[in-house]
Image 1: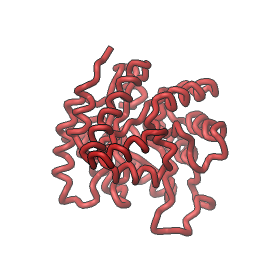
Image 2: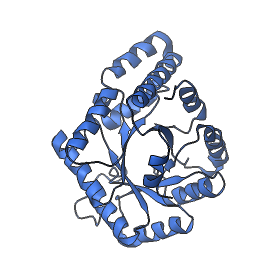
Image 3: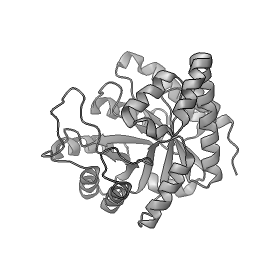
Image 4: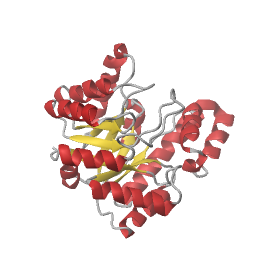
Length: 291
């Protein structure tokens, strides 16, 4: 079933994001964590390309297992990186045969092992190209797109960034999943600005608990410290005082406060970036009070 059709049926809800481990021998442990998180009753689960440059084959195998063996509604990530019409058509046909009804269409980041890679000249240069292809070739496929409350680092301005989100929705995107943020006002203002620009589809906030200083540092290298607001400095002070145990406690408390605040503000649902760790997500959900 398309996620866009499921969203109005339950409010608020949780959805979850997983990344398939690169080494297949670790998959049983991964699926055991997913099994624990069924207690959250997620509306849907999304699956990235995998750790360390995983492949579409990993994504296909994982979403198929989630659908057939765990009775979850999976959404496979797709990116423009190195994509061709033939390859995309083959992958979309494969997930359709497996009963997968939804994809998250992303531009993706340039591959780190290819410093000369450029999107210019590629068959698919923007997420909107991917959305348009899917909508034309696979009209029954549900399509989500991504948004960044703190603005994409390559965008010339916030207005430019919002314009591209509108472009992806106009091309056929049915809902928006936000990348992580740590100040709720950033997200709520972002949604307000999208609405002012005529974007009426659901916008789901993405929340990630910080469980170690190394994780915070990694996020900062990808998105810059601006994504944290002043929270990065709080994490540094916690680490100096009590190490990663203190960082984990602070990170979980912040995630709980974010999720509760977002639900109280009336968001349709919250998308949790699980880091494949059931315990942390369950600890967050257990502390949430629903309307």
